[in-house]
Image (cartoon, rainbow, N blue to C red):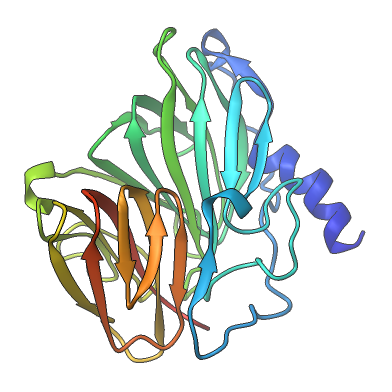
Length: 283
């Protein structure tokens, strides 16, 4: 099976899961773990310049219960020029309708981050976790040797919007783990708030990768600079709302910008803006 066929069949059926109503979440977890991500057999083409992904160029699918945009190749969206940015493999912008969700499906050897932007999402997994993640929370799973989980919108009359982010780990076969934290939105007002790192003792959740995530919410006219945390990392900026310039490049809501060789990154708000900075290894 070639890569494109795999993306259109196996990846979608495993990653998206079957659509189930909220009353169908009590199914038992299977014992066999399968693959639901693409091994990166060819590296992303990264040049010494900016990589711009405009919001309207993302992959898009509307399944009724799920309206989703893909920054990188995923499910039925395949673009050989958009396989990943370094170890950042998946950046999905998902809207799940009320009472619906992702059925039980497997993951392995992937760091999986969920960032709710609106609404509530209930999570159940084969480790016994049953949790609800809400706006201003972050959830992380180290899939490692293999997990099963499901995600459902428990509110019948309100959609949930969340970012689903997959990071390739720096070690395989680890014991699966789950973590979740809540953050004060005022702590990102006109400053950067760290929400993820490789260090369990640092601010935010942690993953098996030399990656750092920051959220920022800034007023119009404000400026902030960012420097990559580690040599060899690139920086990917995803605009949640608003309008800003990054090293002179104009960005709007849901645009993404990859900076493969970051030095000092200057962000200038031309409107009130909220954004996510992902500082990740390029290999």
